[in-house]
Image (cartoon, rainbow, N blue to C red; front, side, top):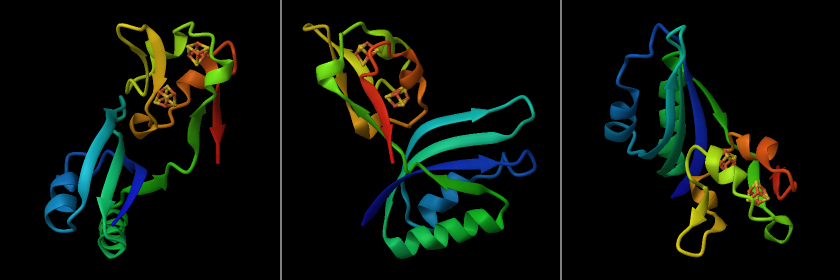
Length: 135
Ligand code: SF4
Ligand code: SF4
């Protein structure tokens, strides 16, 4: 089994098709939907964490590409440098997935990289440069 985080871009002509249903049923992808949005031009963007065999992954990718869906991999990763963190909380406010969050009752910042979708909002928000993007 392999696990990947990927971003799918759907043109407006196909955005309403049941891709996730087919990926699960026909290609045996185990899918964790991290984020989904449709812009005003009716184009879709979806961030997924996929677990499946390499063979099923390739088959699913071919299905998506032949249907007009573009795929990119989240190859960058976000690293939290705890020693530099001043616990200001700015990142926890803007992190859309709560990968960076305030732990209660200690009220200290924690980072769960399995929830991170590499949106990079925290890079801009952190005054202490305690969050870094690495390839
Ligand atoms: S890049 Fe930063 S703000 Fe975006 S999901 Fe990851 S930890 Fe949260
Ligand atoms: S914004 Fe930076 S300094 Fe502030 S809590 Fe988040 S990681 Fe720590």
